[in-house]
Image 1 (cartoon, rainbow, N blue to C red):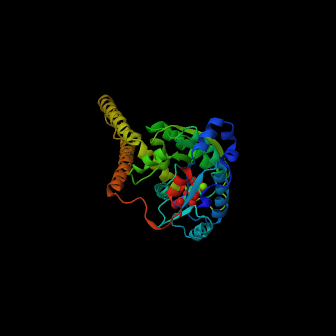
Image 2 (image 1 turned 90 degrees about the vertical axis):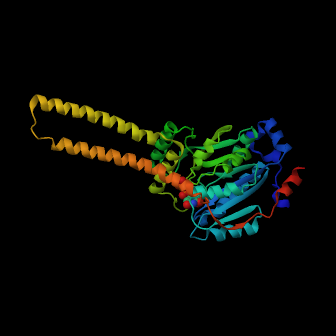
Image 3 (image 1 turned 30 degrees about the vertical axis):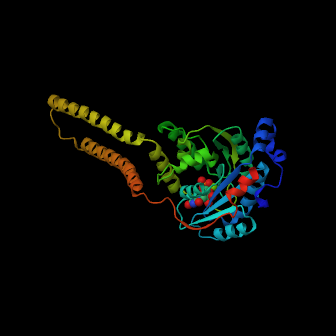
Length: 351
Ligand code: UDP
Ligand code: MG
């Protein structure tokens, strides 16, 4: 398959980053890698064409083999049609159609499971992650990194409230979880085969991908970029889903909320003992004026509230372990249109 190979010569095009480092350029020449770009799509019909063009250009610049894996995550518009017509023209495209909308994390998992590349790059379909960064991410991979995070510097076109909440969330999560999730990174990053294999060994149903990526460890680094406004369409996220994801991230990677519940329970129980002792002494000294109704109500309501909170937190963890114990598949595939190119074609090229 001739189209499998990039048109341009690798040395010419492997971006300034690599060109300025002859040792890296040499490594890129020794072997050609396969890059798998993974794109979950939910109602992105108008973004598909520009996304494809820009991504292809960026991939050609690396001078490597590449494939694009599009996952249609239960779109209700003509995203699937768009993808299939694109595939008519370009045989390096694989289209996976999920049986319904499973959510971005599941769609991404489906794509990662199907990726055959030496590296995989998850990319949002709305062009908020500039595909032009791919050569730079790849250059870092050639330097020997397994995870190259694309770290966003600035978010154009996103409301202040969203920027602020995500800023606070990443810092909170960093504080209370036992893994370090790199700040201000989305799902846009480069993952080596080693990381992909590690991800395959993580069976959890509730997948907070950013956390899972970070949990794997390995040598990682970051490349900074400016996050753009959505190309067209509306964000599929709303505050409810964002909140859900935040809870997901915290409960999957931290037990602090559980400890918080028992800790504050202890403090409150202790202080109510002290308060009771104070009341007894007060009554002994000054007699009982039967005016305790307000303080009683306050105590009852406060403790009731605390108990509900603690129960709620326990419930969050419990529902997750219930979810895990069901062992349901993370996603279901309705149809797959694989790329006709075989791995052996690449091995032959490299031989
Ligand atoms: N997405 C998906 N399934 C969903 C929601 C979103 O596959 O249920 C995809 C969407 O098509 C896009 C990416 O996930 O490619 C990010 O979605 P969005 O732009 O809505 O999220 P945001 O950029 O606001 O975090
Ligand atoms: Mg987006």
